Image (cartoon, rainbow, N blue to C red; front, top):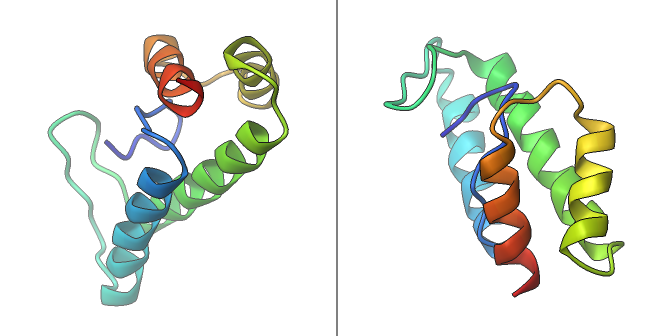
Length: 96
């Protein structure tokens, strides 16, 4: 799921890197429109936002001691993002 203003289920740093690689391919190909089955139509600006988000998730995880500190920091930096249940799953996947 892309979701420029929604948390995604990310199964750790390697998964974030793979997702970013795919989004970078979209940018390189110049896609004007990105359609997913889980969110609204999006564009390359949205892909860039998600890349930045995923890179930041990795940095937050690296500097967090556990799931709770990770979630607290992500929520602090992305207070208007929806999909808190996705953030819960991501936290569990990064730290278990």
